[in-house]
Length: 621
Ligand code: ADP
Ligand code: MG
Image (tube, rainbow, N blue to C red; front, side, top):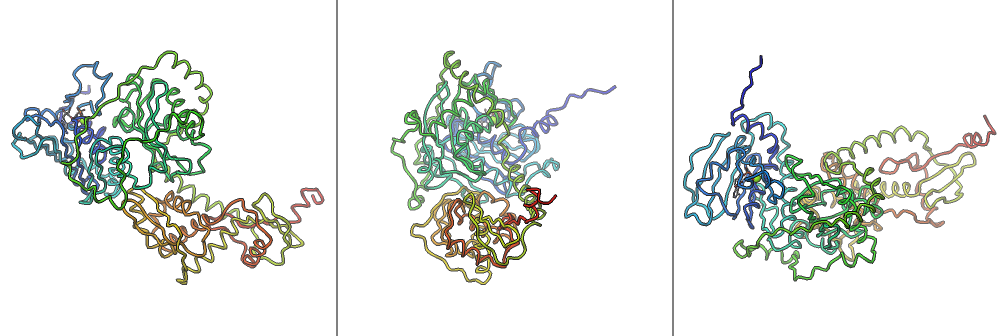
């Protein structure tokens, strides 16, 4: 008969650790949430090697009393819940009393703390779950927790870690969300000694700037409204301000960063018509709902939530965002001017803001008072939601895993490439004397050579011609450039910033005069002459949307061609009517140069043989 063992706490914690502490970023998340719960308005996070080697979180919160230090790391030790009833209206971020115990069981941890009313600080050290004695510590008011050698005693878990860089990226993403979600807290985030983010706790505008750089506010609507008892406040991108991936979407529900498909599909659908393929809306939104209408305890890391009524949430968000975008009369009451005098960082004065923490006034964290949804409102909402229910269904595809999505996209690209290779057999190989017949559907040029018909995709052809010329010029170092009348200045996030810096030589080689222009901002001041018609925004968006693919491309010629082909694509205007001269030029340029594909592998020309046409009309069977 099997013997039932009661796990001792040491074993239990190592199991629990798997749930809460999966990766460095989850440790950072737990520690920062604890700091926020402790009322800190000044939090510093320092990591080394993506957090694998070291994570340090310092705060100026209420501290842990010397006598309590040891119990803080015990499982189910929490100062936040005393009775079951507390669970229902808990507003703090952490409440399971598991985080510290779990972290301590899989790392080497030092916790130093000093509550304001205690004369001296105290600290404990713990290693792999073994807790040392409490000793005195010279520390200012607040708490400092250092987590070294994460998973040193769980090699299996270590194996699942990404590269240092990959882990760092996840911590960076997390920190950006903390900063945006807690604009009244001043954050400093340092990775391998380099300051990545610094926010000043002086409001959402300033927080937005510290993450997204200058310019972002002009591209957004600031909205502040309440509907069906749901408060929605924050920034949404204007119609044209679309982004190449979902890393620019942040939702904070009752003060906590969440990823939730009901909300994200409501917003995406509201943007629907304004988005092209592979464009994503930008938003940073604070959403406040009555605590009893949401279950926050569904996910071990608490990143998703469950609503008691999904339709109310979906409908409210959809309706608010649509009204703003569609410019309905109600939009006026939703969009708010930010009236309070705000300090905008510009590149010039950014450095002035490197002021010391002591100058920053402590701000009290306040939670919204929640309104109840009245029965009448509920009913009203219910009816209008039935129309969109079907929409919810079709959009329930999870919008969560950016990485999986990118991977899928890359795979699609490859399979497209392979398919094209097969389909293109029918493409003509040589061009003799062609007679131009017509332009059809503003897209196709139709030719005949007396025997057969040829359909040419004018955009693909044009793109191909541009591309060939371009690559030839690059290869012979013969690129001429043209300064822009108005330089194109654009903001990026940290990952994109790093990518652009890393790949900058390629852009320069291709004739783009591009430089870093202050914090997370770039300036393009000249472009290659051969693609003067380029839509730079489209080009940059396209490059950034394929950032992961381009980043991993290690063969310089391929990378260069990929970027060049994106540039050519952005230089072609679709739907243009060609005049005779254009057509002539196109034919001359293409002479003897067909059987080609556009740089993305699409065919340029397709032949329809007389035989085929005769078959249509049953002249031949
Ligand atoms: P929980 O946050 O779920 O209560 P944790 O294991 O994360 O559980 O933390 C245990 C306890 O340690 C908290 O309830 C809190 O009392 C204390 N604590 C942890 N971090 C801090 C901090 N930075 N400042 C003050 N108290 C803290
Ligand atoms: Mg906690």
